[in-house]
Amino acid sequence: MTPALPASEGFSYREHRLHCEDVALDTLAQRCGTPLYVYSRRAIEDAYAAYASALSGRSALVCYAVKANSNLAVLDVLARRGAGFDIVSGGELARVLTAGGDVQKIVFSGVGKSEVEIEAALNAGVACFNVESVPELDRIDAAARRLQKRARVALRVNPDIDAGTHPYISTGLKNNKFGVAYADALALCRTAMEKSAIELVGLGCHIGSQITEIAPYVAAADRIIDLVNQLEREKVAIRHIDFGGGLGIRYRDESPPAVADLISALLARLDARGQRDKTVIFEPGRSIVGSAGALLTRVEYLKPGESKNFAIVDAAMNDLIRPAMYDAWMNVLPVTPRREEPKRYDIVGPVCESADWLARDRDLALQPGDLLAIVSAGAYAMAMSSNYNSRARPAEVMVDAAAAHCVRRRETLAELFATESRVP
Ligand code: LLP
Image 1 (cartoon, helix red, strand yellow):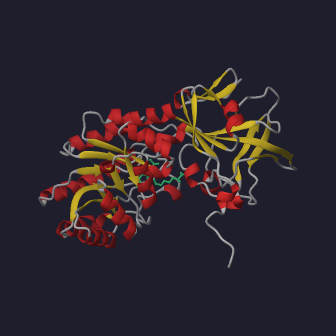
Image 2 (cartoon, helix red, strand yellow):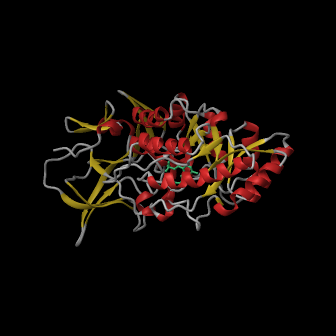
Image 3 (cartoon, protein in one colour):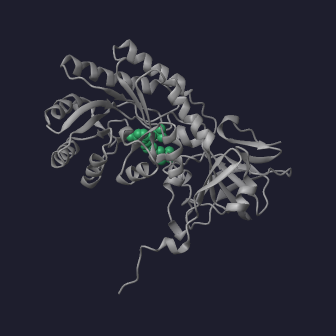
């Protein structure tokens, strides 16, 4: 019996071997080594299409949140489909431009944009800055005047909505550092209107990530629409409303609603409240790439313990930090399942930290040398990796039907300290 997997997301068992699209993962691991990130191009494209098609016929922009997975190939695949991009740094701007993204579809989010980053974005000509504070607005205005440009700006409002997600990834509550306080939003819009180099084009919010219900989005949308209506009464016209990130995904037993249902609920609110003419922006990250990726890792040792059995694998917290950081449950699948009786294991890495675990209490039949796939690892996985313990980061492969393209080669050890030097 092979473990069940959703069929649509690029990974499936064929004759007891786990495949990504038409590529057998054991063969791929042999060829490229482990740990190895593997992505399904088709799954990424399908996930993007779910947003794009639900928005067809409307003025809309789907801006993929680059932070979720910033590999150039991922950005390239999405740019070719017409995606926009949500960036949070000058580094992400450079990546999107290098990958062929359309600068006129870039929105620049983040609470701490530096002067250098603002100038780079103005020179590139991004669609808009999502502004989160008064001093940031001042800084953008000053930079735009210096460069003799006008900066398009959307205000990111904190709607004070509980999205019911992990505290570390909830962003729309009063006590979060994000967004402009709801009560101050109108005043800030008026201030923005007075600045010579600022053009106020939108309002937006972001309430958190891995949200698996529609209700908090609708509640936040209503709060934003209240503000837009109020501004219109004051003859201030706004062009777009940005609803922030996308839906959560299924890691274990979550059942997030369909993207189409989220979008139709939000569009219905806009229509009902006289805002049909607004351009709609979404900034989905996780739901575009999350289910489209897996981390392949090989069992190095089996270590029976008094109260626990450990399977020590060659991937570690530096490669995938979500379990250590958020207590996240990630699904672990054998690439070629064995028929023996399973035992209960903690799957841990070689890093010298007790927090270096990838999964706990999993019933698996394992032997040293076996390959495991940690699935639903396309988002916030490689993007959050580090070189802790001087470990070279994994390679990444983009599978496209029967083809497997290496889209990032494994780091060499020399590269780990290539920017360092000994004292003179
Ligand atoms: N827009 C903004 C302004 C954001 O801050 C985020 C995510 C997104 C869009 C994308 O949200 P998504 O569609 O992916 O839910 N590292 C954490 C997740 C952090 C999310 C931060 N902001 C994790 O591994 O769960």
